[in-house]
Image (tube, rainbow, N blue to C red; front, top):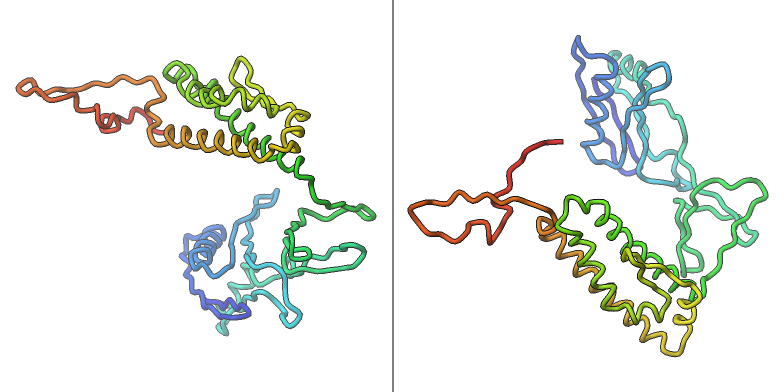
Length: 284
């Protein structure tokens, strides 16, 4: 069997065969793999309803449609009766939802866009995440420098705290909290500078933010110096994280067994790379 898949720029012919033992789901699975492997900007997926019935859904990765376009893609069977019958059974030529542009009102004027993301006044990007309720509005404004700094510092502190949380959660499998020790040592080196900007280190090595102090630091005359310290702190954290990712075995309890040659005196073979002695004891 064969069918044509036409886009606004190209036309593709797909051929497939059906064995006697194939179920409808088997045929749909074949077509899904065939279309996805072709990488032509059409995504194929299988869906199932509450009754257990399967359907093959095709959708375009392109969004929006131009005024002179009738479709983003269409599917047509070839002229043979068998292919037309197969298309009727599969139903993949049926349109469940037509392509369309996003529609929105900005400053009282109606606009449309080919996608849900668009640029306003060539200054910043907006993304529509859903359909708003009738009469509801969203107000978009610029943040103050202090608010923007506070949000960025919060993300930095949250990322640091997540690493500390992971270190605590795996403390039984680690060399005595080496990950926590290495990462928190960076915060301790910058403790005085961080506390002056409203970032306090508690007994469990988590960072907490005092927004008032942080705002003061962001609006102070020496704000640039404060930013430089934060960048140094961030860069040092990145270096520590990179070291941990390069040699993660350095952060776990491990037993190294070396089978030495009794006739020769070699240095311990796993000193240079303990990964050469790793053995797989389970597969998940």
